[in-house]
Length: 366
View 1 (tube, rainbow, N blue to C red):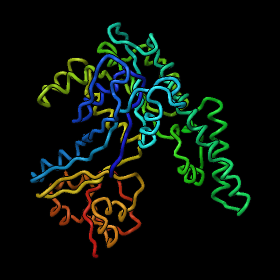
View 2 (cartoon, rainbow, N blue to C red):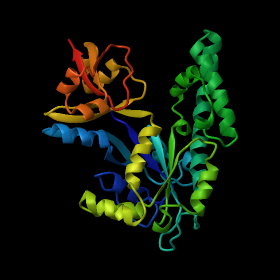
View 3 (spheres, rainbow, N blue to C red):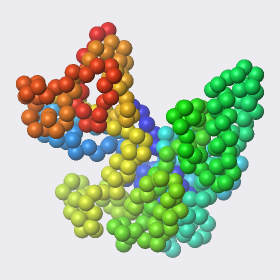
View 4 (cartoon, rainbow, N blue to C red):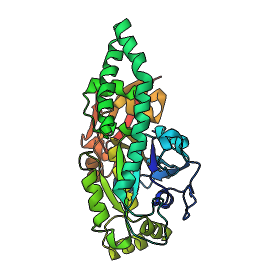
């Protein structure tokens, strides 16, 4: 399953440094605005302790972890919604992403220029929010009359529902609130997808701090948490500079020692990837055997035939049944054969909702 998270923020807040830590791709990092012009696309390997345990058991010929695509998007400035700076490109790139990782500068350093002259992450957040909100209002205004006519002329129920949703969104946006703050029922949420609003995308706020603040945060982080308390959005504290140092270390043991020395149990990069997974309502099912152990990404709530289709479209088209082993049973018993002997393999049909960590084997006929 291909999924893109866009890393956004004002110029010089640490986006590209963080991107470099996350991905094998290398974005240029320099102390001036608009360093990143073309969106750099990289691939994150999703850390999963369960996959590592299956590898210990099976000793497979190959291992394939789950991955997520990330995009380092050009820095935004005031007026982007009207095409200022690289605004049009920024907005197009973010529209193509499934979620937003919003990086905020939460550290003082006179050697690193801030585009607005002073450090104020709440102001920086509002700058980007306003530009995205302006663009969303434009999107609604361009669509509104057309949908009103459709709802009246032919009694189009979907158009009527969409007009209702647009009214709700417009009220929120005019109040300076993002579309994601509007509470929709299931039917409203379904038609709202047609609008492709920028501020409806799920967001994760990343506070980029110095080493002294990486464990307990600082006054800037506190201000961000207060500012986003009504958005139901997660706030992560990460030191992008420290993550860059960790990325340079060669072994897992060296990285763990470094983390322990600064008071952390897990790297910020790992926490960020896991938070992005949660943000996007994603889960993982696993396949295991001597040839390959693999983690597969699926959306929470998917049924067995849909997840089979992630492996291959023929699996979904000719789906017969799924054989499911719970991860804990597999680890406890040590193999698929022993799980079968112990009656720990469940036979599930088309209505089975796949659970996070399920070890799956699909039967199909095409």
